Image 1: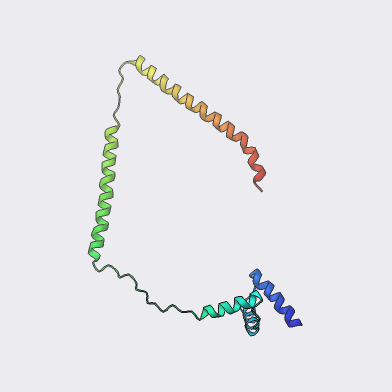
Image 2: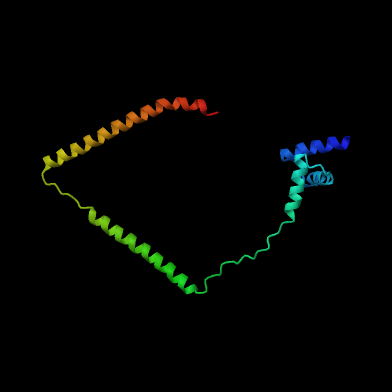
Length: 146
């Protein structure tokens, strides 16, 4: 009777994932000697024993290494060269796009500057309103912290 209680406690421990290899071997021996397949443990251990005998007999061919290493080196050098050329071309296009505008009239320059600051002020006012609105909702998030 003590052995049955021991097996029951080992089985609970097994399903909790806390058994050692030695304890699992005890369970495996117990359930394999028992021919009753109605218990899930007997079915599980007989299935695992059966699956241990399965072998894979097909041969697997590994991909062959490239025989022409010079080709791979040349391709990598060409790729690096292509990246450098594309980045150099892009930088040249950006430099051409940065045309400066020179305004000689001080009144016109002052008017353009005022318009630019008015545009920035409008954008800053909108962003401050969004920040205030989001900070108002921030207090609600602390409820879900824990």
